[in-house]
Amino acid sequence: MKNTVLTLQKQKEEKDKIVMVTAYDYTTAKIMDEAGVNTILVGDSLGMVMLGYEDTLSVTMEDMIHHAAAVARGAKDAFVVVDMPFMSYQTSVYDAVVNAGRLMKEGRGNAVKLEGGVEFAPHIEAIVKASIPVVGHIGLTPQSVNAFGGFKVQGKDVEAAKKLIEDAKAVEAAGACMVVMECVPAKLAKKISEELTIPTIGIGAGPDCDGQVLVYQDLLSMYGDFRPKFVKVFANAGETMREGVKNYIRETKEGTFPAEEHCFKIDDTVIEKLY
Ligand code: KIV
Image (tube, rainbow, N blue to C red; front, side):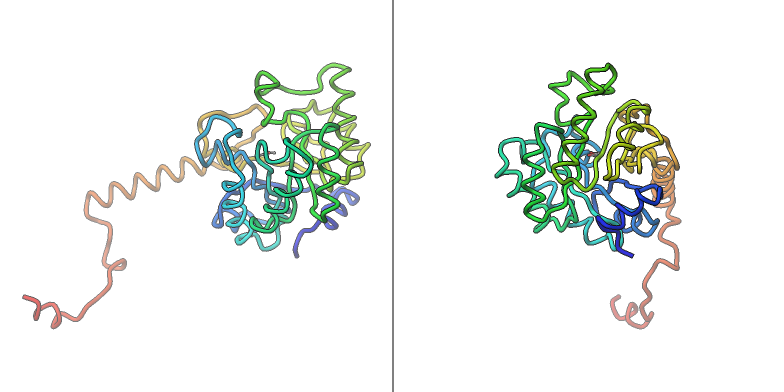
């Protein structure tokens, strides 16, 4: 069954946790979809885990459209959320609507996600008015890494915690269908999740959010460059891949691959006539 804004909302009401994971290509999206995740995020984290940048700032609209369209082709049931890249919405409400439209029309997403709270409520409202579902993203918003001075837990003192609650409420009031909370203390995320009617999806925000999201290379231990505290490794696919490729190298060098079962046959009489 296709996950939609309505089924995701129902999951919150029925306290059935929403599972979101990132994917950036057809094959991985198909695996995640078949595994049964509710929603796939085509995150701008692709800048780091797929393209090797040090942060998300260089990711373009073309990058997002290219990867989103591949994911959309692989995701039969999962609700596909596509990140709006840095400077595709911050510049104006008009740009926000135009670029959100491209991510839906060319990227074939089911929703867009953008970072920011109170300050971006008008952008969210305008996109929602264009019939495009929006997922908010508050707390640690990686596109603001330079403004934050690094990747840090947000909302730790009273003032910052109050601002985070205001951000969450502003995003909901603007019409967002869900909100991602990144690097937020667990007890604060719990309070926000209780106060909002829309689902909250946590990453480094404790167990009381309505759902969880992880970058797939983190949960499958495929990205060795940096592992945040909130990541749990559920399988060691990176090691399995390395082993597999080492075996391929060894057998190719030994000449044991390809074996007879991997070869195409031809009648010997044909070969004889070639000599
Ligand atoms: O880009 C991304 O993968 C994200 C998640 C970390 C929530 O925004």
